[in-house]
Amino acid sequence: MSPLDSPVRIRAVDGPDRPERTPELQALYRGFEQELLVPLWTEIGELMPAEPASKALPYRWRWRDLLPLAEQAGHLVPVGRGGERRAIALANPGLAGRPFATPTLWAAIQYLNPAEDAPVHRHTQNAFRFVVEGEGVWTVVNGDPVAMRRGDFLPQAGWHWHGHHNRSDRPMAWIDGLDIPFQYATDATFFEFGPDQVDTRETPERSYAERLWGHPGLRPLTHLSPTPATPLLAYRWEYTDRALTEQLALEAEGVPATIEPGHAAVRYTNPTTGGDVLPTVRAEFHRLAPGAQTAAVREVGSSVYQVFDGTGEVRVADTAWTVEHGDLFVVPSWAPLALVTETGLDLFRFTDTPVFERLHLDRSLQEGLRT
Image (cartoon, one colour):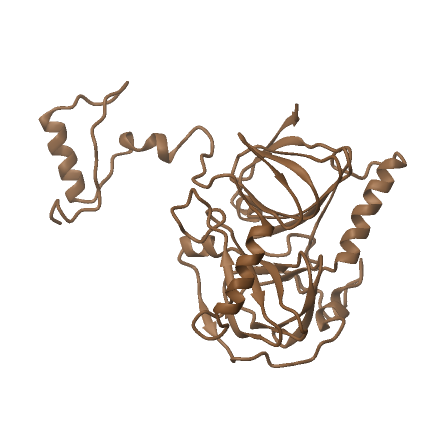
């Protein structure tokens, strides 16, 4: 390969235990470039830092700014083959304009007008929808119509046929979460088109999946084998809200039930294994009581949060924001996160932790309460 064609560029720098910059060293480096070789001694600081140093930055997106833009897109951008979805992805400012919230996680606001269909397709990316407000849309997963309502969490494993249709007279927006960046980086993705419209117009209150799997602590004997992702397609807000309310009530009665004083939390789980709902994504819901604050916590792996209700202050590393209904924010890997609220704060969270746990690379550190 010609030196001019090589993408490798090696620069000699001064420093402790660095080789002396001589014509012979420069010639050696040009030889490395020509043969597409990179010496570790010029790269070790970036490749093997003392602790994770994510290129992603802490960042907050305001729901009150996102929703009007999604509404405008609803007037200007059709839904159909080619675009597939009217989904607008969060682009982390540290990731060079890529449509990625973090190096492994995708988050987007999706918007569907009245009587619209989002066409059917399938992909290997694991996905979910979380509804921060509104109702009237059904997602149809492998022929199973699933109602989408405020506070609902709707996971969907990779390679399942799915489309959406809005049966109401109002538009609806929600949040999509996927592991697109992770599968993109690992060259693992497949995608396939399906029909232009969903295969059923039924609008049942409860999906087939809920009727089979949505009974706490009960499992059908016809389905005893574990599955890599949850077969339950909707985790309804009424159950999430009740679980969080009871945790705080038990704490008030002196029963250990919360992870910190005034901090109730639940994890959505796969009923066939008790593990995470999706192989690459963990999803949780956190509730802080009025006046609560959290310890600062660092974790390997990145997270995206959406404020469901309430207001509070968020600190991620050296960045702090006030947040309110619908706001989304990113916590990069190993960046400390701490929260405080005077009025109470409900937060939906998703993270890539299952990937790191399976690789035995997970780690966390609690640094103490905010001061």
